[in-house]
Length: 140
Length: 145
Image 1 (cartoon, rainbow over the protein chains, first blue to last red):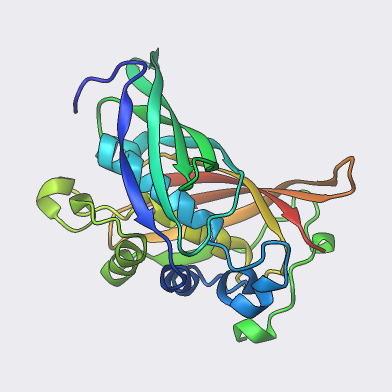
Image 2 (image 1 turned 120 degrees about the vertical axis):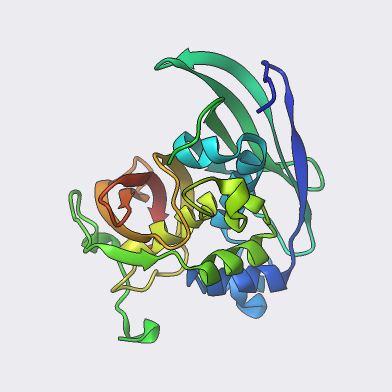
């Protein structure tokens, strides 16, 4: 695993959101809330159209952290204070990324605390959170 | 009982301390593949035994969002209009493809906030077939009715 220091940027991932991907998430999760899957219904709500499921953004953040921190993330990572701030809509390309805020010692190992985000094309943050990843090790 | 037959899970059902029956989920290769396809996350840790080490391929950690939701909706439908306000995951051990998870949800806290919104905080714990805790999830929602 590479060295990490406060201020380091995590390599970003771009994700294209379309209604097809939203439908696939509905199938996978069993969440067929009409706000996500029914454009006509969703068009009559305050959102004015369908929006992606919030947990899909959590999947993107997990993808980012697993890519950067590998097995250590799946073994002892923590994704905390994740807040859903703005809806992600079909047709948008979102950027998933983060920045190392600090590296600290905890329980005899080094842990990187990262600010992570899912950002909309206009720069608005759709989801923000903190992710803590051990810098060594990986569970059995 | 089909999904359509399930009663809605309403706020009145979500008293503090309510514990839902355990939800069992087998993490199959097909499930991992469906997840990878949907999310577009093709990390070799999920399918390459060489990359994942002696325990074999791991399940995508983001699957936790899916089994978390299923753990309190086995017998109910989710009413429309809820808002997922916040969610937290703590991974305690990797989930491997082939594992069978036992996931249990508990209402940690439920209350009306000062604006009269129905707040529900679930604590959801998952363990593998060996009884080893693998994930702890906290989910904070504003319930619609």
